[in-house]
Amino acid sequence: MSTGMSALLDTRITRLLGCRYPIIQTAMGWVADPILVAATGNAGGFGFLAGATIPPERMEADILAVKSMTDENFGVNFHMYQPNAAEIVELVIKHGVRAVSYSRSPGAEMVARLKDAGVVCMPTVGLPKHALKAVEMGADAVTVQGGEGGGHTGAVPTTLLLPQVVDAVGDKVPVLGAGGFKDGRGLLAALAFGADGIAMGTRFLLTKESPVPEPTKQRYLSCKDPAAIIRSSALDGLPQRMILNPFLSELEQAGGLKKLWIALQSALAFRRFTGASVGSLLRSALAMTSGGDISKAQAIMAANAPMIIQKAMVDGLPDDGVLPSGQVAGVIDELLSCEELIRSIVAEAEMRFGTLAAHSHASASPGSEG
Image (cartoon, rainbow, N blue to C red; front, top):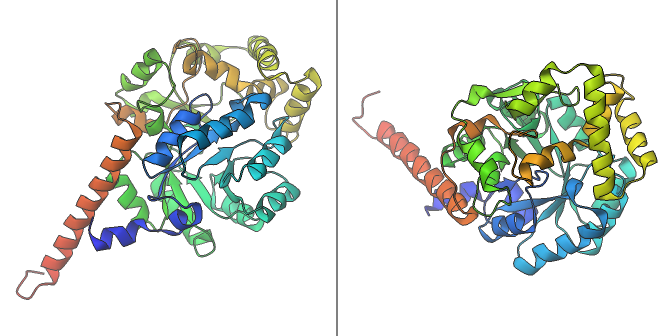
């Protein structure tokens, strides 16, 4: 690799996380398991375990499983409203996990507990004001997701949002771009915007180490139209991007009672899976409705969405559950290993950087046309 490109990929985020390349694998529920996280780390990236969909009694085992497969650093993702959030924080500290990621910010005490233990706090944000608030609460880095990204997302595209967040907080903490990234061109573009690296979910979902069943992976690969990966509020009242399929179409047309019925079924399944009490599920739902933006039925579905997603991601029934996806799935056509993926991203970034440098040198040479 050229000296210039080596310096370009040695960013604040690689130094903060202790990884070779500024390429982050995000914590997708049912997808970011120990095998995927370890493979990402071994390939030079940095992976996050999906702590929100791991039963509390298995959380420690999964952390230890990652450690058994890699000596590289990794992180854990969790949600502040999940019943075992405090337990996850203690496990992260106990086992020296390098970083945590989250969307809805934990309380100041929890952030302080993590930071005092040397754990890097990396929230995901969707607006400059959220980034400013996150840094004020102690974030060590922020991931900003543009509207192309999968799961809950905003409407502003990454190309507009990323520079805004870099301008807002980039002088204080490293900024990662998410939404629409899959290759070396995207990495180089993000760095040109002033970011310190990229975070990818859908691209890592579509790798050989991803635990997603083959029928579901093929459903993602068969989606050749990014416009068919829509933003919908049907699941929980909050806009999130998913591949349009029969289940999502049914949700889009369902009335309040039908949504409540689906929500209750999901809640019961989630309770059986996690062992959470009915009271804790209701408290989670009530906490999510405190702002008044979503109904109780939608809140129950939001709190238990992992069980709806499980149909596709674990059971291999892509038409019977929702398919969270970034629009980038519409332009991905092959499954690579994590090693092949990260190696190809770095190689392409190096090649594109070299081309730009050659153009710049040529235009600056004596006698070149202006």
